Image 1 (cartoon, helix red, strand yellow):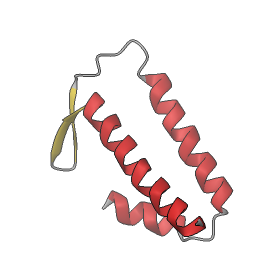
Image 2 (tube, rainbow, N blue to C red):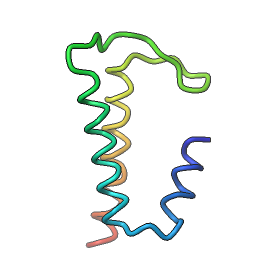
Image 3 (cartoon, rainbow, N blue to C red):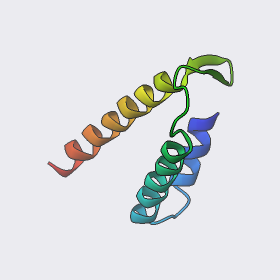
Length: 75
């Protein structure tokens, strides 16, 4: 559900530079909010439980997937 919502927003006509900046700003706010927090706390997104550190690891892997797609497009 979150992915579909993000995909719809990305194709809504928003400038790509603005979208990238919004992603970076959101990630930075998340990181700032986690200073001095226990990254092993467990939380749930929809039906999936994970720790904060697992979430950020998955986010980094997801970002790397998209970076590879972009590089492939630009080559």
